[in-house]
Image: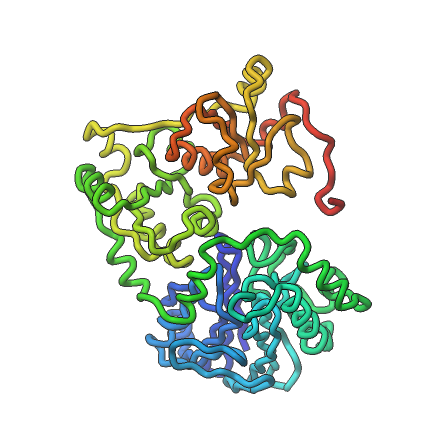
Length: 469
């Protein structure tokens, strides 16, 4: 028996490859499925099952493409109702895979079809669970993503999740390995551990949601407290996972079209496409196409695309290093943004050589900011998350988390100068690019963010450990 976790850091997502005696199961595959097929072919094995733990909201799964290419059965848990042929498993239904068995444990609560898959080895011993978004390491799935579809409140879903954990997962042996659907950084939970594999026994000790003496009322209170609004693209990803989508080959073919500066400009005007610049932020601040938005491939690219652009049908034109064109299109498609229509051939160098207008961002070091701010006292906007800000921040700085920037544009001065910073310099450039596209031009970005500001003598609030907040 072979179990491989295929972890994608940008999405903080775990897919799984399970092989036994020439047969393979894939759990929660990514959109680009060829690596799974190649691995199975290399091992002389056949992909028999594609198990989906639920209808994912944060990414588009590769289940349909993988089934089309391999003939494997797609398996969902009870109550699932997709618009394509699949096996809707019964609770505790067993699936033979070579010499091992995979059992569907219906664990609703995150969503109503959420299912945990229990793997039993060739000797009939419980080996591991693939818990999707039901159980994370250090947390559980948020219970508010399916409430509209299920006609249930988040409190009711949390109560259902409480029962699922205590009747289906917690009775399992402490030695059972937990393979979760996501890790730290995912918007599907609140407080995940950085580790991506653990034992159930350790989770019973470490995970607040698995405390043995926790009442249902306490669980509901804990799980629903502190939930921020989910990203706007989530429902659109759910719809794609339920209803179908184009193959990634089609998406790449449509988007992988190099456009001259003149063609790029015409396309932007005729289609009202969003110009998305995915180069490193240090290059972006020096020169970019006016009104373009920066979200760099070197950061948490796909989640920020979903959070800031929102509409998966939005036409997108890319400014990208030419050796990263396919990577950018692929990573956009992972979160359902399939409407890339081309990229700037020759990049910003070609744009400048063509004599086209450029824009730039004033970006200064934390040391320069410290010296300058003492004299100007211009407003400072901190675009980190609430928890980061609460732990420690520059005295007098205004909190405006990047996630919700589009809802708080009126808080920024349109005529006066102001500063923006994040933790390390990535999110602040995203924020600055969005603000400039909306007509805010008197912005100074603090390069290096709060990490660099901490090394200056500027006054900061007393540090509070996030775990005590």
